[in-house]
Image (cartoon, rainbow, N blue to C red; front, side, top):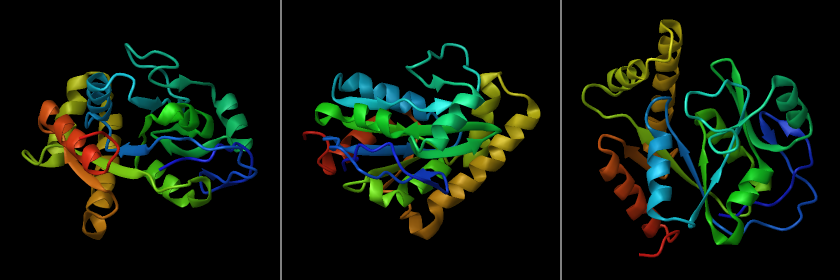
Length: 226
């Protein structure tokens, strides 16, 4: 479950390959993915509120503009394209991906910080990021746990997701359609291989119920005390 602390090395397929690791993160790492608009951030926020001080959040870097209410260094590290490319060239990311024309990435440093003191690190990324983290075997001491958050099944998952995206009132029509298309591909990946691409497929139909199921699963995994 731990992550080696390394920020040097080459960059291959969006994954930094660290060398000369110096120490290790002590806590567990839980990777949470899901399509845009599914409520990943809300689920994570509620889980962290239930266990103050038990979790650490891996604050990702992104080149996109902040949304209303988002705080730099809390929700994301908002950086310029030039700074992002410099960090990529330096091999500072465990994973990175281009999503909807913007770059996103999770640095080794933020994962190490999130898991210090035996905290459970929560990584909020997309499916591209999940695939990259899985490929970063030489940067991981133990396998993370992978959770995919699904939209409700009724109406259809994609219809429910499109309704949520439109409810935001922040997206142009072409962006909504692009997000829905990406969501379809992500859901297909989650359901592929008999659903074994993830350790947990979590339907976010009711927030409290979804968080409680995630909480129970973390206890089953031994990450939380029963």
